[in-house]
Each structure stands twice: as structure tokens, then as C-alpha cells.
Length: 389
Image 1 (cartoon, rainbow, N blue to C red):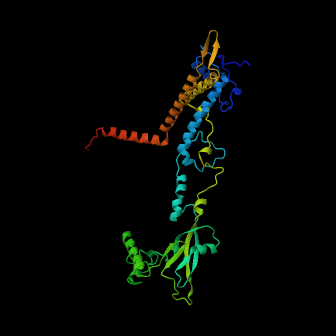
Image 2: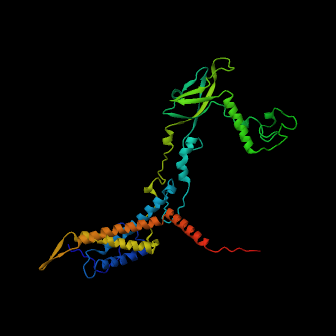
Image 3: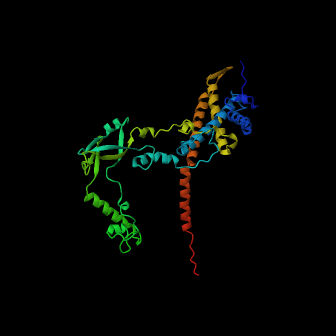
């Protein structure tokens, strides 16, 4: 079978391309022919035969464009994945989209800290209570959870054994009478214009804070100190519960608490994302629009196409190491072509990645900061005029 090789007259046809990613672009159709001519001349045509067809060159051109797009969008995904994670895809593509950083993923990452601090987060806090028994100090939370039908471990987050009422809520308005506490704190209710909010005397806020601290510390140190400890799922209360005015020794009240289910930490951190961006593999980028690639990108594509064609030609010529001719043998340059193709492809990829790194958001911000610093130094040398009016 006599298969024709490159004849110097490439003709564009869609059928010559395996994927047909860019066939709708008039620029691509035009450049296919030009790239084939460029590659053939660089490989020695017409002085030597080039054992390729124009379709092989078109295919290498298509692969080079796709490789350029993959490198570009891989870089963009790496630069923006934190801002894109959780984005709802639904046939939306980022190819011609400007992406600004946002705090939503960062806040989602920090929700775990809010869960532990009790200020939000992605773990539900539940409430529960245990009926206290006179003279019983220790209460088994694991047993309580089993009786409540709770499976798995629980973790106690807060116990309401000491009445959580601040001093500022127990002594009326901070504006009447003598500042914080007013007449009630002074024991002069309704006399001399102090009580009932009739004698306003605004004190510094620092004074109120000192009074609050003094009152609450007084109750903690001088009065009964209600407290608790939790060790190995056992809640120990201080002081030991007693009747204190109750008619019987049983039923001296309840202790209320807030808790979380330990497994919720895991389940709360997992979000189904069938139609959302969840990783680098499903960020919605498609192959680039060849028409929009500028001259810098196209030149890289032309050179990468040449490297691919050298590789293809090297494999073709490697089928026979020599070709016999009358009175001699011709040695083919398969090794040279494959070595050159490998080196050129590696160099072009490294150059492209370095260029993308230099245009990353962090690199551009660093360059802008350096420019500002240099500008400030230059402006420091400008004479400052003193005007006397």
C-alpha cells in the first residue's frame, strides 16, 4: 500500500482531526494550513522528504492548543479553587470569567472553631437535663444518654448549674441614682430623687465594669460556690445537692446542660456536592476559544506543534534505522528527532508554567507592592516646597 506523504500543498479538512475541538473557528482553519507549512519547512522540506501527512500536523496543532488550555486552566484552578469550591455548576463555564476572591469557603473552614466556642458552626448543640437527687453528687452522662435513646458518644459543652444571671441584670438601670445599681444598690429606694430612674448620673463605663466584677467575685468567693467537674462521662456537682426547703429528699430540681453528638463533627463537615465544585477535577473549564488566544499564546502553540511533529516523525523514521540505496545505506535521524522533541516539549512547558506563576494573583500583588515601595523612595527625593502666606 503506497501511502502518500506531505506534498507541500496542505488542504484543511475536518476529517483530518481526531477530536474536532476547534473546527468551528475560522482562525483555527486558517492557521492549520499555515502551521503545516511552518512545520514542514522547519523539518527540511522541500530539500528532504517529510514522512508525514498534513493531517498529522493538524492533529499535532490541535493537541498543542489543548495542552496550552490545560496548562492555563490548571493554573487558574490552582489559583482560585478556594474561592470556587461549593459553586453550583449547572452548565456554567469559567473560560471568560473574572474570579474575585471571597470569604465564603474561608468562613466554612472556620465553622469548626465556632462550633467549639458555641458561637455558630456546623455542629448542632442539644439541650438536656438530669433530675437531681438529694445527697447524690455524681451523675453518669453515658447512662443518661442511653436512657434517652442517644447512640454514639456525646460531649458536654455547657452546664447550667450556677444561675447564669449577670450582676448587671439584677440591679435595675445603670443610669439612675448613683450610677450602676442606682438607689437599690445604695439601699435608698425612692428617696432624694435617687430611685425610679429620676436621678440620672452617667458614670464611666470602666466604673460599671469594676462594680460588676466586684459583685460577681464577691458571690463566688464569699457565698456558696456552685461548680461542677466532668471526668469520664461523670458529672460531679458542687456543693452536693440537698433539699433546701423541699418537702422531701427526692426531687430537688434539675441540672440543665448543652451537649453535642461526637459523630456530628464528621457528618457536619461533609456536604453532598453532586452539582457543586468539590475539587479540581470538576471546575467548569472547557477547551479554550482559539480565536481569543493572543499572539503570545499562539506562538507557544506553534512551537509546541513543531516539537510534537518532530516526535511523530522520529517514531516514523524509527521503523527502519537505515534505508539501503545503491552502493550505500542512508542512516535516519530518529534519535536526534526524539531527543530534540523531548527537550523542546519540556522546555516549552517549563517556560509556560513559569510565565503563569509570574502572573498569579500573589505575584502580581507582590509586584504592585514593590512598585509602590520604589515609587515612595523616588518621591522622597522630590524637593518639598514651603509656602509662606
